[in-house]
Length: 506
Image (cartoon, rainbow, N blue to C red; front, side, top):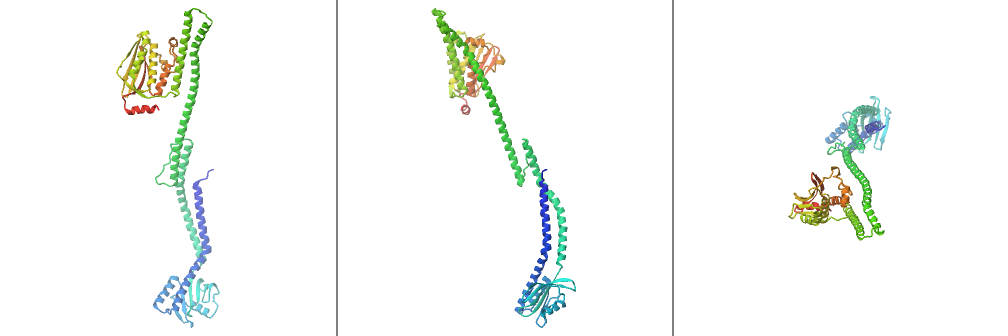
């Protein structure tokens, strides 16, 4: 069972209160009487010193002394009688009685006190300080009796209340006061401890919510508050830090999960890549091996057959070489080993050069190739990589052109972009294959691809190049054909957009 701070504070407070009460009771009981008598003795000594000095100065009868004498008697509640050696009274207080005269007489002549109840407190050659009891009134006195330096006798008395009775009354009064204070303190302690423990309970509830990863609860901090408010502020800061840390951990965990999934995907792609490469190389290698064995065994001795066999071997070797070169290019781009060199160049001239280089193949296939722009259009990009992109688009269009046998190359200028597209008439790409055509070795029509010697790598190279430039590319189906496109930064764009492009490619 948990301890309550409220109860602990109450117990400590009451313990201090009771300790204080009993300490006061003990002091009253054992030390009040001594303290009271000590104060009375000091009053008598001071009166003795004053009168003795006046006697030495022969000023006992002056008006000034008589005034001081009355003040001593009134303020100290003293009865004083001063007499000469013949027992003639020199001065006496107003409340001086025959009793004091008799006591002084007995002292001078060495007679014992009538009461016999005398306790000597202090004694010298000049005076005796004692505590006596008057049997007539059953009251106690403290008296100083003796002789001054000038030879005059004196007696000084002060009535004292019963010390024991005073102590008893004082302790009873203290008990009444302590009872009142205790009942009052109960309410005060309950209120104070409640004010202290309520915010602590709030902090406990907040910590429990934090333990359950709920960081919405915050401690209401008052400006200029006490230490508990400071603790609440620190808990709020800790809550925010924990929330941020857990968020970072979840982000890192999510990234780790993505990395694991990516690794699994890479492993699958590697297996698929090896399978595709093996499949692509299997046919040309088999043809090369078969025709080479035919040549070796002289299946056909005529010159024409031998030349045909050699042409097949050379053709298949060239296809394998082109595929290997494309794979190496794609690998360099995907793994970032190929440096991107940004430059401003005329893309119109680049496209016209590619159209010119493919004109012979276009004429053989009776394909009409057109370009909608002849004036210079400048862009920012890697010129050699863009040449590879356009060449792949043109090669793909020539291999799939059909029906009207028409290829249109368009250059469209926008605000800060230039879009280049290559359209060829023919059959549209099936919708389910549109997202797959950028994948390595993927072939929509395998029979037709095999017919013109395609490997399914060209569009993968295009996608990798555009990703390295942080620019978009895509494909659009039409009823009468297919259009492939890509976009680049305009060469006449703002300096800021060009700087952004260069920064993105670093």
